[in-house]
Length: 184
Image: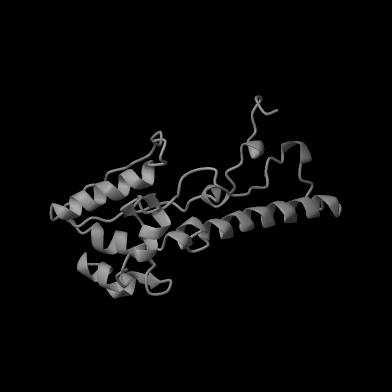
């Protein structure tokens, strides 16, 4: 009998409907933008209209950490901390950035945390969650292509091509895509 894998733990978890969770911590439905039954975004107006009303709140940032050999890093630490604060009776929320595609290629540990300290649905989170990061990258590259095409078609706006620094981007955890002098 061995230990369960992260994916086995995630798939055995009985998820709660996201609106129940939002309701439990006091987020009104008008601020919850659902992505199915188990995922949602919180409208940015919630922060300005509700949270800035003088309520006492604390923010804890987990910004950098070296992961353990098992892959436990920022996400696992953040989720474990939130679970502990909830157990102490605090209303706790976690905001995670969307992970890269590293876990898909086996480059790093699961971006949803690990073991019993992970966010579910794990598969969705590891595959760009709601798609926002991909949309930002696509918009950046569209602007770069439009600028490149404008210059190629005659540069009617007389853009100084020596000063154009708009670069293409891709959300990929690949050392070969980094710009540094140590690349082979």
